[in-house]
Length: 462
Image 1: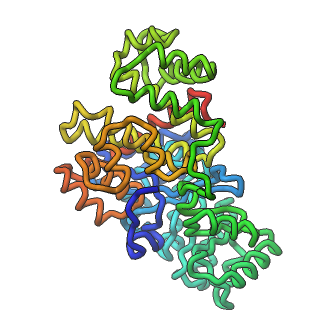
Image 2: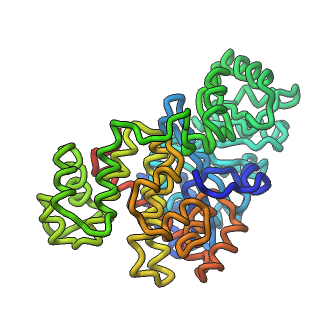
Image 3: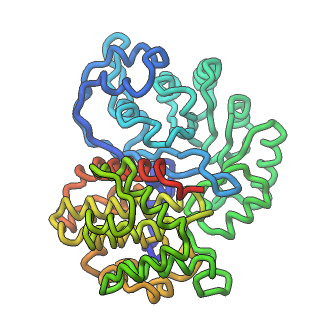
């Protein structure tokens, strides 16, 4: 993708890993709200006695973990602050919760869509049993590589294992003093950038001998992904899924041309409904997709939209351009990695909401399209410059997507910093567009929810 590279010092490490596509933060509500997402009988009693937490700005992010077939398996939860800041004990058995309450408040289902959430655990987090504040079926405690397996740590882990909590070993190194952790491990994670091929193969085989699945971390390219497949990894985490796989070919695949033509027609200087209708007729499923989108809960129109001309009369030309572009990109995303389909939709809405917040009301459609097109190279496996040569979009959008300075690039910089968890750079980018960064978590959560509603009610996701 044309995104700028994130310096290794900012993208590596337990709390600043790359590819994070979820951040959430400030909420000011009574603490009891945070337990209403799950049935009360499934919650630790401590949650029923919490006092209202202080209002703090908290940023959490997620990075997808995929299967060999590039399907979502779960997410690693990344935090701006260490996990020991999630919970701090107070008098008696009550807790003042700085971050854990937000995981409940916003819903682990919203954050991870019901998939396993790999949560970094320091020594303090483990020995004080903070992991038990999370639903056991949705969380995997990720034991950081700097946590020594002393008797207290192993005892805490065994206590939680007896309650059916699961654990992963982060950045595992197969040293004699670390091997006791294998007895309580449900997953082992290896950093493929720091571990030799031979050592990876040896550790993967040893873990499989114990029945422990292994996750490859920091898989940055498709080449690395295939090498990890050869080694025998079970799951994969990193940027590889949103990189184009370009092997000689520089043209759009034949089976994708109708969707690209629709995208071209939706963004042509003159909006030609007759021409667009002809493209829809070439693939009847497109009309069905668009109408399902527009009639879904994500849009909440008062009347049911039953045809493309009907939608045009209700929405107007600008909105129709936007939603036809969306259904085109979604169709182009069929049969790709799960998170690669979510990413352009998420970026599109996030760009639009940021635009609204900073006063770019008249340009929200352009910002939406910017986010929507931002992974077109990966969707088509064609260089971004070649993709943009075939789509009549605004020159400012093109420059932003190619990494050049433009009116829209600063907004896109905020989006990139946010999803990658580069918090210091985010503060700078937000200041550049005169937006206080504390507004961003709510805007992002709204975007995440919107994508979930669109995908839940639309037949685009195979």
